[in-house]
Length: 85
Image (cartoon, rainbow, N blue to C red):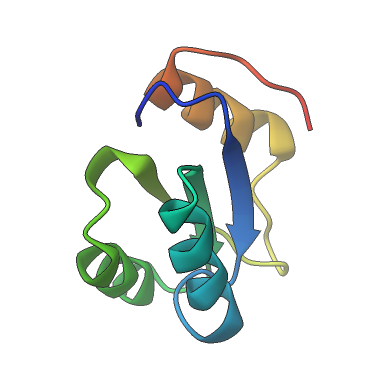
């Protein structure tokens, strides 16, 4: 991920409104951590967005969600910073 100070987590980033939000925030200069249930849809979204390191896909589902601490660690490894949310 880039070293931008602005990072947003978007659920459902593999399609629909979530993908649209990811596009909009990327245009505004944000890093985006996009979550979704399907690794294939997230990869397709990453390919479509062409944002490189500014988009981090993270597979998650509400049936078995990734703990926030785990997602935060993945994000801080990618950006070099630790953030609580």
